[in-house]
Length: 212
Image (cartoon, rainbow, N blue to C red; front, side, top):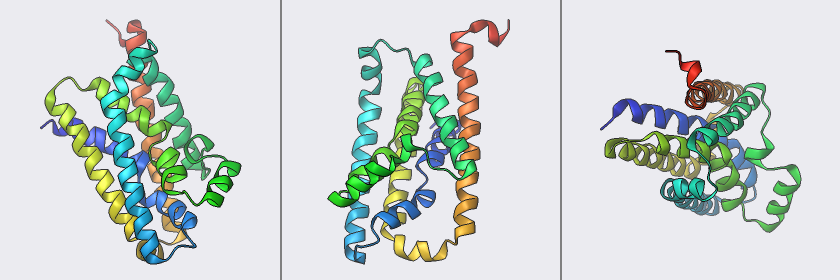
């Protein structure tokens, strides 16, 4: 097992899929549900997230190849998106690319289909998450590193299921200051990871930056 790669993949995915920072959104979208309905919605979100993440891991490279996009190009563009997401979290503002616009949220709220949209997509498996998965799968060059990606994803998805299923209880323990601190901390981590990977992408596209 490549422990270093597992830590990097897990840290990057947790920063953007963090169930604790996304819990307030989940609770607001399910505020009219009973505890039993909330748990069913949490299980639906967990299952849909697992399916979408697995599809990205399995077919991500083929998708890029279909559009003749190099992983380095996608990495640089994707990390710009992640950097904006991280800066938005630091300033306390949600990104419409990651959370949807107000009109989109209102439409889905009327349809009562929050499990898929906006919780699974684009909040949990949005542009930032897809970019992170594709970058790590592109960097993985051994079976151990591919296994590390699956383990990191699996652990976070299980945590999402647990946190959302216990949402009503955990939400009462999380004060607004604690939520704000956690969101900003995850935003800082996400921005730092984005800058690091943007640097790697620029070095790959412009070898002269890497020095002799």
